[in-house]
Image (cartoon, rainbow over all chains, first blue to last red; front, top):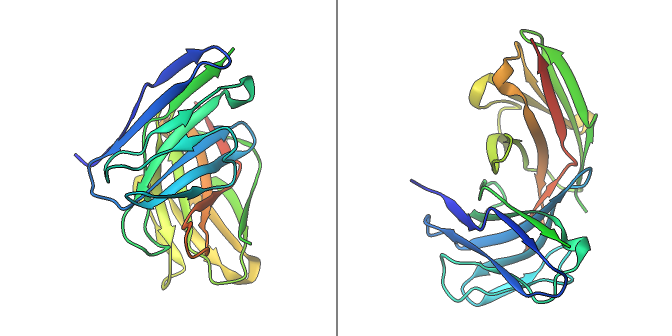
Length: 114
Length: 115
């Protein structure tokens, strides 16, 4: 089954404690990205990757890092989480290079930073 | 730059009634438009998309949307609401940026279906 898998689904952490949210897709998609979802703001892109070893900032990259060492994996790293990073996070992947390709989303990671 | 505005953060309808969720876009080039649905505790799932061609697009679960260039709109409709349609719905436009290829989302509309 084609899917995007995120882990963990829920995470509560303390300010400053480094964490990683994993994302893996089994569709051989080149393009992957991370979004955060906040009430009233919809989804905003954090980082994206067009292929292995190619990553770039989205709309709200501050406080986040990513890496793309393998095509299927795209982890999101919070080196020093802060309470304003409490949010619902989604990983997504897209095939091809056209604007008309749909995005496939993971089930989300609800992060709380206290 | 492209943007999307969804009118109404919450919409409530009775079961069997018409569903109308509004989406207006702003784009300097022909837009590629999407509607996604998010059920509780789940990720986003594609309902339908408009790229080129026919302006009336049919999607899953009986939903459809009509692209109206003159009104810069892409409203989502369903003739008869079902309880299972209760979810949050997002309109999105595909960004033109050569590299990012991101989706720009609206703020979402939560649909409630009353028995």
